[in-house]
Image 1 (cartoon, rainbow, N blue to C red):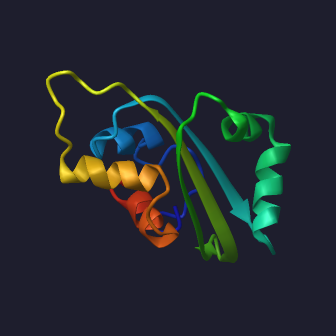
Image 2: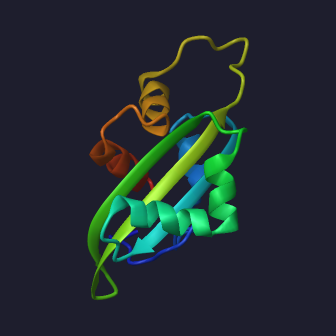
Length: 131
């Protein structure tokens, strides 16, 4: 988002979180995304902002979600110093019976979406493929 100077759930080229997940081999039953932008002094400020929004709160508290990936980055957007936060929520689809071996790309995506990797790596993953 910082590189393209946009803030939204859909990139200027029309890409959404679901498109990126599919391209990375993450087969999902459910996928959701929360984004936030602002000058937050603390992590709690970011969480408070999401929790005040009914749609964002619903994603955070959903019992349909089993995995999450989170990235928070600081940079300049529209000439102002800002923080951007992204949460990706997912519930994987059942594996296909004919495909029981994961590719390394699918495993990387699974780790990123489940929050196992460092936030910097998740931020890099979120930036891949967004045009």
